[in-house]
Figure 1: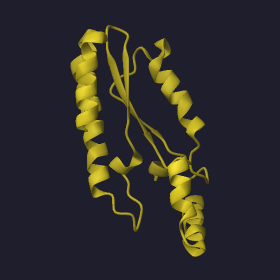
Figure 2 (figure 1 turned 45 degrees about the vertical axis):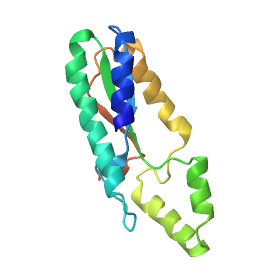
Figure 3 (figure 1 turned 135 degrees about the vertical axis):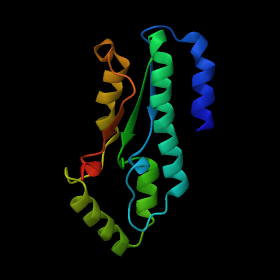
Amino acid sequence: MTAVFFLTQGLLPHLSAGASVINISSYFANKMIPKRPSSLYSLSKGALNSLTKSLAFELGPRGIRVNAIAPGTVDTAMRRKTVDNLPAEAKAELKAYVERSYPLGRIGRPGDLAGIAVYLACEEAAWTSGGIFSVDGGYTAG
């Protein structure tokens, strides 16, 4: 949280009307996974969502937009390394959990986040500020 706050604060003198700040949050701000402790991580992402909305309100008069993307689980190298170290039974349980919990039946791919990031950064999003955009295969819909 402090890194996002101070980075944004440090960049403000260089941002002018039309600028777009995009924070990366997580579904963990609103929804948990059974058997996966996340209180501190969830706390930080909830705070980031609040900061995003506050900054959108405060920076809006300067023409600066602030939004956040809240992805679900994404298939990254770090995640693959973690999953690869699980016992076979736990891997199977995780796969079944994803298939029944994500309405689209899979976790995200890095490219799944690109479209919303490009949109939020471009002129077509000129009237989009203060949003927390869930990109999570429908996981937080239910």
